[in-house]
Image (cartoon, rainbow, N blue to C red; front, side, top):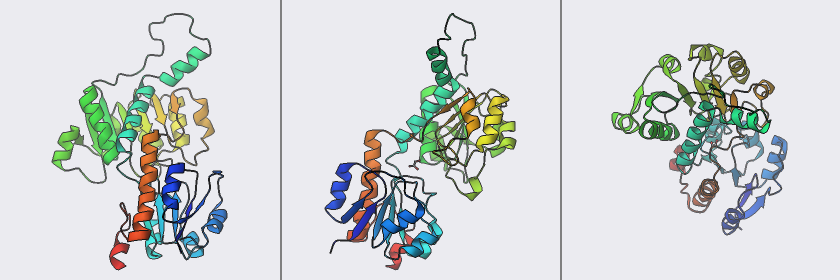
Amino acid sequence: MLPIILIARAIFPEVIAKLAQHFEVATNQTDESWTPAQLIQNLQGTQGVFTTGGERIDAALLAACPDLKICANMAVGYNNFDLKAMTAAGVLATNAPDVLTETTADFGFALLMATARRMAEAEHFLRAGLWTSWRYDLLAGADIHGSTLGILGMGRIGQGIAKRGAHGFGMQVIYHNRSRLDLATERACKASYVSKEELLKAADHLVLVLPYSASSHHAIGAPELAQMKPTATLVNIARGGIVDDAALAMALRNKTIAAAGLDVFEGEPAVHPDLLTVPNVVLTPHIASATLPTRLAMANLAADNLIGFLKHGTPLTPLNPELLTKR
Ligand code: GLV
C-alpha cells in the first residue's frame, strides 16, 4: 500500500502529479482555509503533509495525528512549526531554503526602492487626477545610491540584499545579526557588523530579514522607531510580528521615520487598519518569493522532501536532522 500524504493548500498540478507517482495523495485544490480542527480531520491516516507556511503544526495537532511522520513546508520560514514539539513527537520537519534566496532579495530591494522613492504614493496621486503641474518638491523621496543600508538578520537573503546595495548602488552596508559573519562573507557583502542600536541610528534604509521567534517579537516597536532617522525608510520582508504595526503606523503618521515598505503583517492576511490610512507606506501581500519559477522550485523542494524521506529516509532539507540518526 502506498503511503498517504495530504497537500494542505492548492499547488501546481505538475507537483501533485509527481507526488501521485509515489503516494496516495489527498489535496485541498479548492484552497479553502481550514481551521485547525479541519486540518486534524484531513490528516487522519496520513504519513506526510505538504504545508505552505500558514498551517500551524503544534503539540495538540501532533497528538491527534499519530500516523504523521513528516511535515514539509513550502517556505523557508517555519514559524508555523513548533519544532520542539515535532522533534519530541518524532515528526520530521523540512523547509524550502536556497531556491528563493535571489528572488526574495530582488523583491526586498524593489520594495526598498519603491518605498524610498514613494512609488505607490506617486501612482495613487496620478490616478486620483491630482497631477496638474510641476512642483520643485513633488513627491521627492530619499536617495538610494550612496546611502547607508542597514540589514537586521544577515542570513542568505540579507546577504543577497547587501550585495545588491553594495555592488549595484554603492551603498555603505551595515548589519546586525545574532552572530557576526565570518570575514570572507562580510567582505563579499562589503558589510560591517554593528550593534542593533547603531544600526537603528545610522541606517538610511533599514531592511528586516530575521526569522520570527518569541525573541524577535516586536523587535521594531516605538522605542526602536524613535532611534531611527526622521528621513529613514523601514522595509519588512521577514515576518509579521517582528514589527509592532500599530507603533509603526503612528511613527509614519508623526513622521518619526519617513516611510515604510511592508510585505508581511502581524495576523495577516488581516492588515492593521491604521496602516491602511497612512500614505507613506507601500503595502504588498506577502509576495517576496512570488515568481512562478521560484514558487515552482519551492513546491518541488517540498515534494522532494516528502519523497526523499518517506520513500528513502533521506530528506533534502531537514530542520530536525537529529531524528534521522535515531532511525
Ligand atoms: C516566505 O515567507 C517564506 O518563508 O518562504
